[in-house]
Length: 426
Ligand SMILES: Nc1ncnc2c1ncn2[C@@H]1O[C@H](COP(=O)(O)OP(=O)(O)OP(=O)(O)O)[C@@H](O)[C@H]1O
Image 1 (cartoon, rainbow, N blue to C red):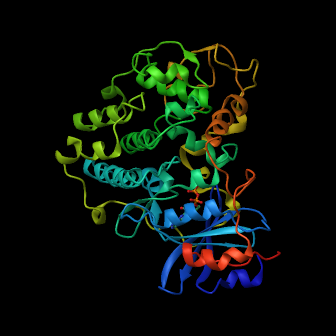
Image 2 (image 1 turned 90 degrees about the vertical axis):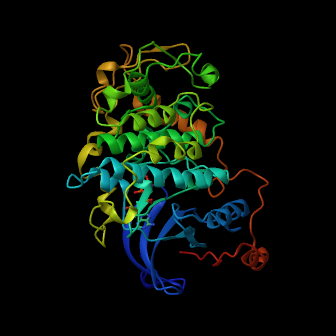
C-alpha cells in the first residue's frame, strides 16, 4: 500500500484498518471527516480504464445512492480512483451470520420475527423501486449499534456481475438461490430475493444453513428432498427453463418435521415464501402483512435484540473470509468434488438424494449413481446464465456503450453529484 493511501483517502475520508475482503474487493474502515462518522469503504477493482468509468455504471450508482430506507445500508458516496471504484457506506457493527453462529446467543421466537421483519421491510422497499438484491445471505444483512438490520450490497450483483462462485467464499451463496436461478432462468424477479429470505428465516430457526448444496444440481436435489420434487402442475414454467432437468419424484417432508420448534404462523409464512412457482411466491409486502407478524409474540424491538460483541477493529485480509475459520462453512471445500463422467444435460434424470438431506454438505455428492464434478456441474453453469443478464459495465464492456471522457467530467460531477478523481498511474 502506498504511503498517501494509508493516510487520507481523497481528503474527505481518513482510511483506517481493513475490515475484510469480499466478492468485489477489500473493505476498509474510515472516518468521514465531513461528519466525523465511521464509514466502510468498499474498494472495487475495475482495472484501468483510460476513458474513465462507464456512464451506465455511474447512473446506476446514482440510483443506489437514492435508495434510502431504515433497513437498507446507505451508500454515502462513490468515486473512482486508481483503477478502483470506491463505494462509501455507513458503518455497521456486525451481521446476521455472526448472530446465528454465536452459540452464546439465544434467539427467541420474537427475536427471529424481528430480524425477518426487518429483512422483509428492506426487500419490500427496494422491490417497490424495482431494484433486486440477487445475492441475499446472512452476512449481507448488517446490524447497526441499535440493533437495526440493514440490507447491504443491494444492486451490486447487477452492477458488477454475478459474483464468481469459483472463489471459496462465494460457494455459500448457492444455499440461498431460488430454484428458477438454479434451473438457469434468464428472466427472474423479486421472488429470487424472497426465496433467499426464506432460507435465512429457516436458518434463524435451525441455527444452521438449511439447504447446503455443494453444486447447483445438488442444491436442487436438497431443495426437492425437503419440499418434494415439483410437479409441472405446481410450477408450469419449470420445464421450459434453460437448464431444466427431470428429477425423480420424491414427496416432500412436512414443514413441521423440518422445523419442529416453529409456530403454525411461521410455518405458513415459510411455505408461502418457499413456493416453487416464482409467480405464485409471496411478495415481500404480502409477507409483511401475514398474520405471523401481527400474532403474538410481537417482534422484539431492535434495540433489545441479542447480538454479538462488535467485530474486532482490525482484521487481516490475508486470513481470508471469517466464515471459513469456524463452524459449518469450513466443511465445504468446492475443490473436493468428484469427477464428471458424462456431461449432465437436460435428458438426464436426477435423483434427489434424500439420504443426503441432513444438513451435512459432505454427505450427498452422489446423484443417480454417477459422479459429477461440482466445478463443472455446479455453480459455473447457472452463474453464466445469470451473468448473461448483467451488463458488466465496469469489466469487459460491450461495444457502443457511452463512457466518460475528461470533457464530460465537470458536467457529470454536477449532474450525478459524484466526486471524480482523475485515474492515476500506479
Ligand atoms: N457497511 C459496513 N460496515 C462495517 N463492516 C462492513 C460493511 N460492509 C462490509 N463490511 C465488512 O467488510 C468485510 C467484507 O465485506 P464484503 O461485503 O465485501 O464481503 P462479505 O460480506 O464478507 O462477502 P460477500 O462478498 O460474499 O458478500 C466483511 O467482514 C464485512 O462484514
